[in-house]
Image 1 (cartoon, rainbow, N blue to C red):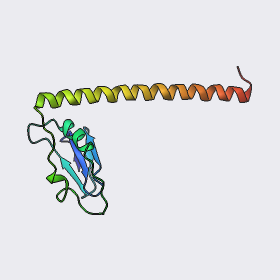
Image 2 (cartoon, rainbow, N blue to C red):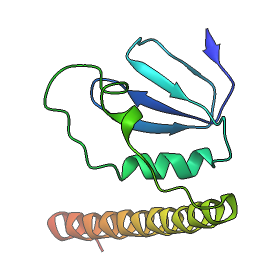
Image 3 (cartoon, rainbow, N blue to C red):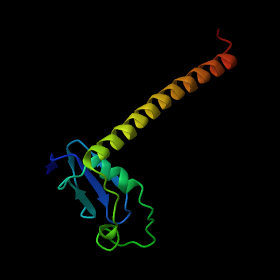
Length: 121
């Protein structure tokens, strides 16, 4: 079955890895928890909060009920949550642009090195 009620956060109960998903997908693992927006919280904000939780699993067990469900998270008003998400998304966009520019420069360097070895101008 294809899951189409998004966005959601996928939480791996064993590894505690989180993923923000805003597209249709198929879920094939019982260890994945789907976190949906049920309260006055920006789901994207919750995703970033969860990325900042400092917890590293040391055993192979389910961590949602035993650990994560007990963590109190900072929850500013919804308008502030939206502003934080907007700022983070802007920085992520800038990072993608810089990575693209770096990849282009690396390709150009590779082309120049190729020309050195193959005597082409």
